[in-house]
Image (cartoon, rainbow, N blue to C red; front, side, top):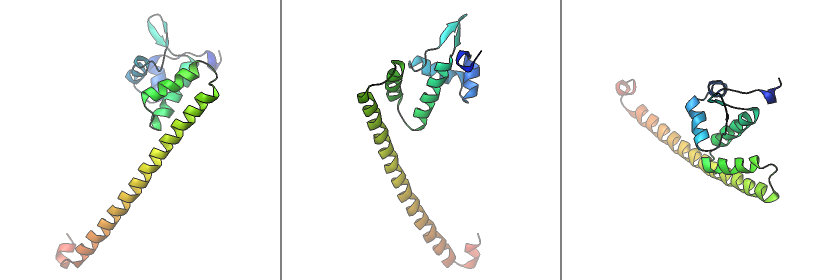
Length: 134
């Protein structure tokens, strides 16, 4: 049996990605994963595993569940159209721009904190030696 024919139980698939079984059930409730049933148990296929990889990748870079669901809907229907690719590219660029703005804000805050640290160190050094040692 090849990898594409392999099936995974909830616990097994969750463990592979360091998730809880509840996380997989949550993604199922949101319609992002659609495992088959075998004997009343959820069975995840190679395709489900690939979808989970995409879900986790999109979550990691900050996409909402709704945005992920929209992307996966295109993925499910086969080859996306040029317009769907363009829409996806726009969303990626928007997210990238937001992250770059956040990065700049963080850099500014770090700079301010370093200046405050230098000021506090200088003030401490100007204190009496007995206080500076504390």
